[in-house]
Amino acid sequence: MAVMLEFEKPIIELEKKIAELEKFTQKENIDLTGEISKLTDRLISLRKETFENLTSWQKVQLARHPDRPYTMDYIRMIMEDYVAIHGDRHFGDDKALIAGLARVGDQKLMVIGHQKGRDINENLERNFGCAHPEGYRKAMRMMKMAEKYRIPIVTFVDTPGAYPGVGAEERGQAEAIAYNLREMAGLKVPIMVFVIGEGGSGGALGIGVGDRVYVLENAYYSVISPEGCAAILWKDRTKAASAAIALKLTAPELLELGIIDGMIPEPLGGAHRNPEDTAQGIKMVIKRDIGSLLSIAVCELVDQRYSKYRRMGVYRE
Image (tube, rainbow, N blue to C red; front, side, top):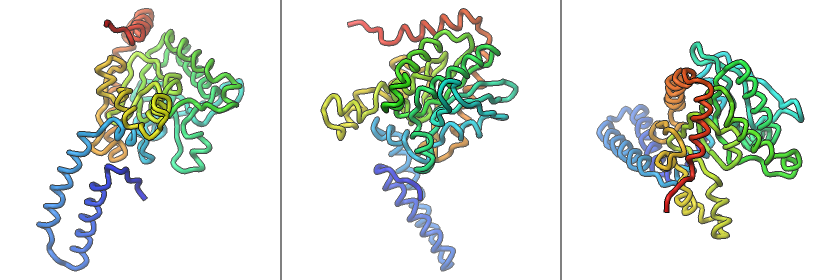
């Protein structure tokens, strides 16, 4: 059964009504073409009105939609010859963060991304996309391998945040993320980052330092989740909608602030409505940008990446 978000209810109900009328028409052999046509026009108008005017909080809800494509879905739709690589060679293999070699056309890539589960068992196995320190160390191991063989890196960010449990802290969660930030800043290969769903806090940044950073239209990228922000500022998690506005976490806002390099459009209703179209949008950007990034001299590439992040947060009163 498809998940229905609160603001989608009128749309889903209208879709059901149209489907029922079409079924009734076929069963009873009664011509209801006029009524169906009117309802279809109304549905198109309602979809457009709803999804072109989403609030920040509604976009967060869409970013978390359980039917939304995940990293493995995009790898399947965009890339060829994917070969997974496991483990950090220190502790274990974190299934919340996947990595491997793949190809887009003739271009080899190292692909790394957070991976959530489709059901409760898989989500428990993948820790709901919340990576442990061994996940970030695995990611850096793959990045160093990519640097050695001059293979561009593509990362898919989709996490509410790094796992904050005692075990993760004991194994150096903060150090693992900080190390990745430092090392990614100086990697001598192109890095492209795509925020495909949730882009939460240091968990996102641990694989999120790149030459080009793109956010999908209904994804979000933020220093903290809206609920976490509301709990800290107002001691009330129910004020998440207000926090989402204050955080300026949507793609257009991030683009205006200079935090990201671009927004990738989604089909009306979200990426889960037409995953293939969304995937093709990402693939087009990869093919467009990788060639130009590879043409930049290594020292200049690293300097540009460093300058890009140094400019963030600078303001005049």
